[in-house]
Image (cartoon, helix red, strand yellow):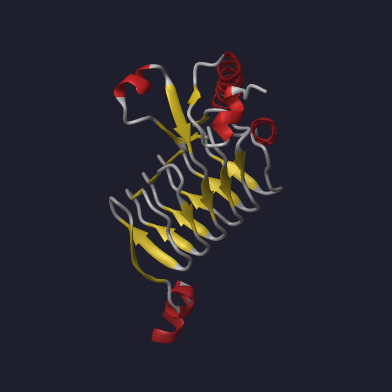
Amino acid sequence: MIMREKEKMLKGELYDANDEELVQARLRCKDLCFELNHLRPSLIEEQKGIIQKLFAKTGTSFYITTPFWCDYGSQIEIGEDFYCNHNCVILDCAPVVFGNHVYIGPNCGFYTAYHPFDVHTRRKGLEYASKIMIGNDVWIGGDVKVMPGVTIGNDVIIGAGSVVTHDIEDHVIAVGNPCRVLRKINKQDHVCRDEKKKRSS
């Protein structure tokens, strides 16, 4: 039995991105993104309805500040209490899964797609895709780019401007290009500012 290009894509195998089934799926997605991005900001329920059509799975509580773009939408899952700021791009040729209580700053990108190093293969429009996983209680600063195949653990802060090329463990602050662990999140980090002020007064 011959494997469809979509099946190859989801299995992480080399696939033809110009396959007609995939082209039509992307066009459907782009039309929905266009519709989403041209709604008035006050039409929150209408925006929510489009996102639920786009994504494979959503929680009950989420908000995405437009403009927003993705490739298929059908490979994106978001948990409860999800927030995404302006200008997010998700290239979801492979699954992109966000846990609960994930907050994303403006101008972020999540890219599952990548191209062969061999120029002759690349010219044919063939590419790969690799899954991105984001845990629970993750705060991703502005202008962060997450590369194919990356897993970010639970209770993680990714500093603004970071390029995440490798997995990030639980309970850490990570920054830079390439993104590296700066330090563990400690007990003092879990004390709110108001409480800190009370203790110092």
